[in-house]
Each structure stands twice: as C-alpha cells, then as structure tokens.
Image 1: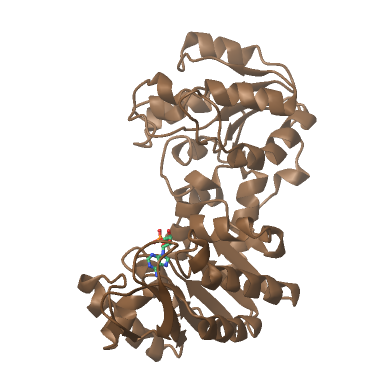
Image 2 (image 1 turned 135 degrees about the vertical axis):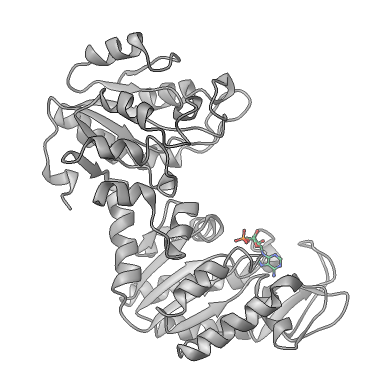
Length: 396
Ligand code: AMP
C-alpha cells in the first residue's frame, strides 16, 4: 500500500473524504474542532503539492434531504480561518454550477462540497451518485476513519471508480497501521482492558479478543453481570440479567483459550448514583443491598497495575468506573497511568472508545500512549473482527 507521503499530487483534482462531523451549537459555532484538526496534515500536504482539493464530509444525520441546520457552511468558514486561506463553498448540491466551480479550481485551491448526507443516495452507497461524484476528480483519498465502518457512497462506493488512484489519507493510514499491529502481530503478553456500562455492547469485542489475548481485565459496570453469573452478591450495581448466560459462555471460552481473566477484587460502593454519595470499599462479590458499585477499589488498581506492567501489548476500551464523578475516577485514572507507565517501558498501547480517550486526555497523558484511536464506532467494529468498508474499498 503506497502512502500519500511518497506521492506528488500537483495539478491533480483530488476528491478527499474527510470527517468534519463536528459538534455545532445553536449559534452555529463549532464547539470541538478535533476532527477538523486531525484532517489538517492531509489537507496541507495536498495544498502544498499544488493539488485541487475537493473535500467531502457528512455532518449529523439529516436523513437524505437538505436541512440547513446541518449545512457545512460553518465548517468551511472555520477551516478557512484555521488555514488562513479561502475555502470555496456553496450550499448548492451537485449539478451544473458545482461542476463548473470545480472545473475552474486552480492548484492549491480548496473546495468543500455540501453535506454528503443531503443526498438520499449517500447512506445507501448509491452507485450513480458515486459515479457522478467520481467525475469531479482524478484521485480519491479517504481520510475519514470516523466513518470507515459505513458503507456509504463517499466512504466506500466511490473508491471503485479509482482502481489505480485511491489512497488513505494520513489519519486513516495511521489508524490502519496501528490497528493492524495490535490485532495481527501483537507482542506478548497481550492484555485487553475492557470496561464501560453494558456487557451487551461489548460481547462481540470480548468474543473476538479471546482467541488473541493472554489477559483480560474486565471493569466498569459490565463487570457485575460477570460477578452475578459467578454467584456473587452485587447489591444494586449495574447488571444485565438477560446476559448472564452470555457472561458464563465468555468465561468458559476464556478458559478454553487459556486467557487469564482479571475482575476487580474490591469495589467502591455508593448509597446513591452521585459524586457526593456515602461510600465504602467492599469485596466485589459481597456488595450489600442498597449499595451500588461505581468504581473498583485500591487493591484492584494495584492488581491491574501488575498485569499491565508485565504486558507488551495493551488494548484499553471503556472506563473502569463512573470516572465523570471525581470521587469514582481512581480506577479509570489508575488504569490510564498504568498503561502510560507500561508504554514508557516499551509496551505498545492502544486506547479507543470515547470515554477512555476522554480519560487520558483529561489526565493530559494521551501522548504517553502509543496510539489513541480517533474513531469510536469504527475502532469498535474493527475490534469486533468486522471488515470496515472504508478500509476494504481502498485495499481491494
Ligand atoms: P459505555 O458507553 O458502555 O462504554 O459506558 C461508559 C459509561 O460507563 C461511562 O459513562 C461510565 O460512567 C459508566 N460506568 C463505568 N463504570 C460504571 C459502574 N460501575 N456503574 C455504572 N456506570 C459505570
């Protein structure tokens, strides 16, 4: 797979799929520009090469029709200020005028098409729309990792019209390389730390990881479904009673594959779901009625640290406790620190999923991890063992 780093796109019309799906408030201000910032290296490379860059993105879920609330106009304006250069934009959809504007682009020009999801064909992966879009460019580059799990027109279908001229942007390349290293060629021991509130949303990941990892740490609210399945007393802690059999099945599978399971031995329990609740520390399988676990306890933090410290590959997805409440953040932050320390000693660490990424950013240690994924849903689907249409479309 060629990297765009080694190619020169001067004079080429490049169709660039980016992920500008940023949060915008009621006054059309962008409240978090992370995704725009992450697209800059690829955009700058193309502009510096002297390409004519035609950017495509979605924003929100406008249901295949024009909805001014989801216009990319504020993004065009923001990007223009950020780069200190004009970003050509029109709210018109693809038609004669847009085609004319594209045909008049000069090397180094940036053009942002209106929200791809204003077209009914986008989310259906429509071939005719893909073909019409493809006619605008000579080359297709996908840099929208956050949308790589979608088989949409601008993320996947369009690539087939560029059999010899389709590439990953820098962000996609970074994600694909790191995910590949994590899942295809991990150094051992490989420890997965999976947390979050619900086991139901993590079953596919756990099942896919079991044959690959050596150690599995399960924390967060989902852990109590496992504890109950083992016959423990969990008080009022989170539990999905309809998933008890699945929890037993997963633990059986771990045994079959010699995966060592680590569940927090102690828990910080609270008499209310609040930061100011009364608390005590109890063994995780002896939680009294009327009390719910909102974090793991100090012994668990130490136990996890020992496992993480001896690992060569670490994957972390999902918080260990309700870390949004400062009084219940020690488990999550403890794991974050342990992963950072193991990484400093040479382990390869991957962090993914909105909450775990938020936790390492809150601690200011995101740069101490080997790899922090930018795509929540896309990374999850990769970890579940699914092929991501946005990746496959470029590689096949
Ligand atoms: P998820 O979206 O399933 O990954 O879960 C993330 C959420 O799990 C975060 O908002 C955490 O506050 C929450 N969480 C973590 N541990 C617990 C727990 N022991 N009880 C309830 N919620 C939890």
